[in-house]
Every structure is written in structure tokens, then in C-alpha cells.
Image (cartoon, rainbow, N blue to C red; front, side, top):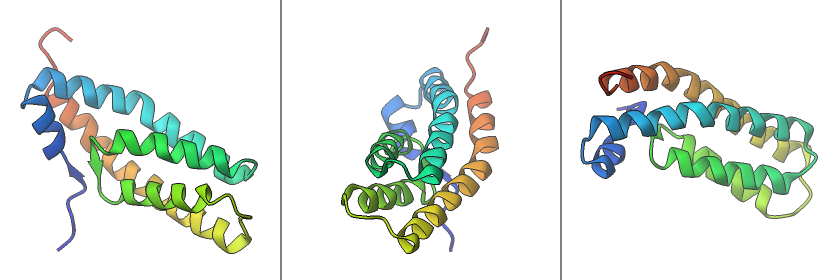
Length: 127
């Protein structure tokens, strides 16, 4: 059985099921996370600073620890761990990082419309 795409359980728990709180958290997530993922992809593509890649992956993990999108946290953690080791990144390792990133992008693309719909369901009156 496949894990659900998005687990809103933790968000519901910390919000006390407050729709306005959930709306705000999802809105902030959607306003910042796509840009952060894009920046991570650019950093991976250039390969200029693996330390910066590690820091960006770590930063994104914070967001996806609240809004749990299937596998994304684990893939970010793996990218962070690989790039944090401060060793030379060879082509095989770079390919592994790129594969992890591509999976993140694909999963996030599936999750984005679901997040937008969930945000709309929790939209405060007058917003």
C-alpha cells in the first residue's frame, strides 16, 4: 500500500484544526517552498558549492517537516547528508543527488494542486 501524497496530520495537530492557521501555513509554504526547490536545483546543476546545497536542503526540510509530502523530507535529508560530508562529489554521486532532486520535483508537482485545494478549503471568510 502506497503512502498518501500529503499527510496533514501534524499540521492539523499543531493548528488545533484551526482553518485560518492551516490556511496561513499552507499559504506561506506555497509562497516560499517552490522558490527554495528551484534554487536547490540551480545549486545542484552548477555544483559550485555543495555546502550551499547542504544548507538549502536543510532549510527546505524545515518546511516539509510540517507539511509532509511523501518522501520529500527523506530525499532532502539524503541530499543534505551526501553534500555535508565535505568530500569530493564525483559524477556518480552527483547523478544520485540529481535523481533525488528530480524525484522531489515530481512529487512536489503532484502535491502542489492538492495543497492549493486544501488551502482554499481553509480560506478565511473575506480573504
